[in-house]
Amino acid sequence: MIGFADSSYILSGIRKQELIDFLHDCNNQKRNIFVLCDTNTIEYCLPLFQTLFPQTKSASVYCIQSGEAYKTIETATAFWKFLLQQQADKHTVIVNLGGGVITDLGGFAASLFKRGVDFIHVPTTLLAMVDAAIGGKNGVNIDGFKNQSGSIVIPRYVYIDTEFLKSLPHVEKVNGYAEMIKHALVADKLFYKSLSEQRNFEALQIIEKAIAIKQSIVASDPYEINERKLLNFGHTIAHALESMYHLQRQNISHGKAVAVGIIVESYLSCKMGFISEAALNEITGFVQSLFKFDDKDFNVEKLLPFMMADKKNKQGQLRFTLLESIGKGVVDIPVPIAMIEDAFHWFSKQNPGYGI
Ligand SMILES: NC(=O)c1ccc[n+]([C@@H]2O[C@H](COP(=O)([O-])OP(=O)(O)OC[C@H]3O[C@@H](n4cnc5c(N)ncnc54)[C@H](O)[C@@H]3O)[C@@H](O)[C@H]2O)c1
Ligand SMILES: [Zn+2]
Image (cartoon, rainbow, N blue to C red):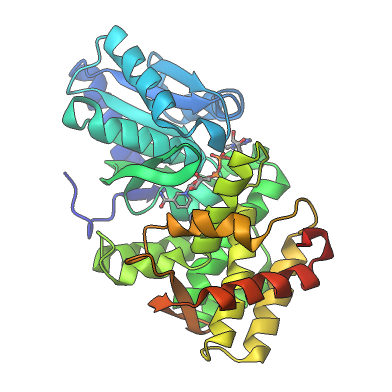
């Protein structure tokens, strides 16, 4: 297994040959390669992937429905059954070709199949390139509750190629930007500044920087004892929203949920006395210029039970990762429920479509 400090990710061009050699060796050693896709990536990304890596042309392909609703233990079980039918063994290699749903689910399935087989992430959304495919967290949702079962096992390789972004709808690029903004807010003020000024969704340089921030946080705390919790900024709210939408049989993208989370949790950071009102306005203005929050309504009473399922809580007390300043996060801050209610009222006033 590769250690967390090792750089296992490959940006297109750089070290690509290493992955080609690995796949070539797999073929020579008759190791089975399986490619996991969803209904979009099989169409938009598999042909490019097979052109980049012809060694995978005879690999078996398993395709799942696209969407968060399929990031479940049931989908993983169906995939495991398929692998068994295909006589997959301990030496099997799984390539996860897709967005964060595919990398989370495929990593989860691979990390448990036969007690763990090699897997390679090929992220095809911006969000997966800068976040989901980096750092070794794999998982599935249970009854709509986010990431309730999972593992922390890092892939053998992560191959990042911005060519895949060419077919990605703009709205998905903006979703990825939300996670980059989160990385910047908790760790790097200058990066935040360049994200807010440049608004370039697919520059390799920016992607590289975002990955480097995540890699460095993960390397210092792979099992999320402390510092890795920084990356949860915006996510207590985001995960609760996603679960609630799921229960109502509605959809919200992870990136958009994170955007709401960034705004609401920045408000909490301000009310808890950490960031200034000017910083709150700056963050809110920037995020609201990227996302339009006008679709569904939510309310605190509905959201609170979902927040209670958050893994960061201790003894029923809601704990958040907040901002001490732009570029510096702070973890494990207990926040009173009344303040969370206040935050939602404030958010609704700013975004009338979200009324409560
Ligand atoms: N493990 C982690 O550390 C981590 C971090 C952040 C997010 N996540 C998880 O990632 C998931 C969200 O990831 P996502 O936003 O990538 O969602 P996703 O995988 O659902 O992809 C978004 C949409 O884009 C489509 N798509 C993917 N690549 C495409 C391409 N190149 N061209 C055209 N369409 C394409 C997909 O089929 C899907 O419809 C959530 O489940 C979230 O919890 C995990
Ligand atoms: Zn996220």
